[in-house]
Image (tube, rainbow, N blue to C red; front, side):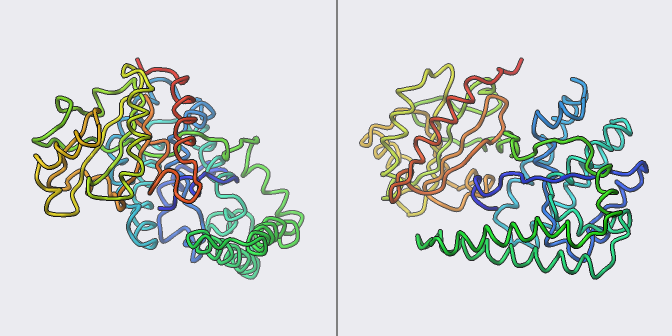
Amino acid sequence: MLHPLCMRVCCAGLVFAQLVSVIAAQTHESVSKYAELIPQHLLGLVHAPQSQQELQLTDGQVQQLGALFAEIDTPWFQLRILPAEKQRELIVKLEQRVRNWFQENTSAAQQTRLDQLECRAQGVRMLLRQDVKGKLKLESSQQEALAELARAANAATQKLHSATMKNAVTDELTQEVSAAIQAEQKSVATILRPEQLQQLKPLLGDPFDTAQLKRIYPLAPELVSVEHWINSEPLTLQQLRGKVVLVHFYAFQCHNCHANFDHYKNWSEKYNSDEVVVIGIQSPETSRERDPQAVREAAAESGLQFPILIDLESENWKKWSNTMWPTVYVIDKQGYLRHWWQGELNWQGATGDKTIEDLVSQLLQEDTPT
């Protein structure tokens, strides 16, 4: 899974036909041979309160949907470290559970609007879907032309991503990505015939800006119960609902982790504990970090006075599919992940601390669950 800022839902939309059976039929095999090019945004889309409001879900439906999220969200979050092909395969299965839920618990109008929103989130690439090909009577040559432009945009974006990781971004690379994306977007007007363009309108429905959705990530995985805590009785995320929670994974002998310690201490002192809770999870890398007493002594020496879970068997590390020390996760009052930051917060001039603090300020303004 890419960094959260790279995962923002993009724009596009389509109608889910009048036939409910189409929902059930839209499996991995039936999407199209271009499946790897088609964004999978359904899970993030249905998590967003703005989408739920647009779908006119009742309070009861929202509550039932939340129960489904409680079942599928941890598996969804865990697959982020898998190879892209495996991720796509598993997301298809999770999306099907969402489609099944909508088929069983919502009206035809709500299902239609959901499909419109999904296609709006997929952007131009909705045209690579097999069902859309049939509805617009697209020719294979038209889809292939669109796919070529999609591949070019992906290649340019990947090149820019690689350069970013090496701190080697150039204006030329940035312009290359912009040009590739614009070429893909503008191609619709030239590749599709006039009658096909007209048929797009009912598939998209009324305008809805999916790029502005704020809550598009899963519920944070519940903490695995362990024997040792520092500075606190054992905590669960469930009991912290109504508060913003900042969870950070660290190892006390990790140099990069120490670079973030002052920020963690500042947050634990700056914020009212009735509103924001900082939790450290010490997941060991070395043999000394597997000694609970050594972890306690190191925490005291570093002045860490907030709750710390000693993750001796790395059970929480595994459940969260964490891959890096340090990593900071921001969890909202409802228990949903809203952002995460891997590495030092101020690495090479980065302002991860400000990004997180600004987000916390926003989350504190959101409604507290009843």
